[in-house]
Length: 275
Ligand code: BT5
Image 1 (cartoon, helix red, strand yellow):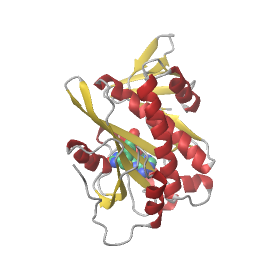
Image 2 (tube, protein in one colour):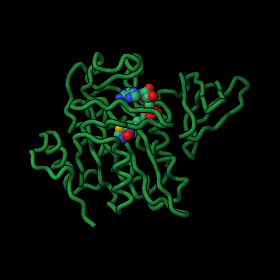
Image 3 (tube, helix red, strand yellow):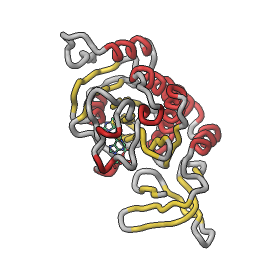
């Protein structure tokens, strides 16, 4: 089955997208990029591609989103012309239980790539936030479709605030969100940042297929973690747990030690952390 790039491109593409395409030619992730100037959500579109049989590594990239999604029904602010919004289609030949580890490897890839592209220190706040200077610069939303005992596909959606200015952010976000430009005090190339993320994600994903959720990956995650050894509150629906974050265990669950020294395990997805 073949897919035409969308929209069918009568106009020239933005130079940064052309740069990105040529940097990723023949690679697994981003070797094929479907560009949308505006879309509801790249995750939504990527799921459609997934359901229609698109191959692993295909990327849906948008300049802006009208209904960008966060986790648990939250929204992702997605103005045009400044940031990155994309979704990567993966087809790991693994059981559905392994899917919970994919956002963790994506967090490592995004934090590493952003640091490399900008020289800024990016950290991970469990499970899926990438912070710079304690504020959120990127978010990850992974969604899976399973079939019986296998994963049909996973869509890894990544939003990075690249050149968004604080004064253009909605006021409620100004305290918690940041961008590469705000932190680095200069503009960054979207193609450079996206290219580094695709590269790092490809590397981590291939290693994950070979080694699983390895000691190496866990240590890398723990080394990048913003929360380890900090006092945190884990919140799920109507319950709260307070304690010290210890890091990830062998399965990728976050460990929290409460006042009484009791250890609690949290699986990403149904819980939020507050510092
Ligand atoms: C996330 O959710 O952090 C996942 C965000 C994933 C976005 C990408 S963009 C490409 C792809 N297509 C999609 O439709 N989604 C993915 P969560 O942890 O639930 O965080 C959401 C919360 O972050 C919101 O409730 C706001 O408080 C805050 N927020 C919203 N937009 C933001 C932004 N652009 N930058 C920083 N924080 C933001």
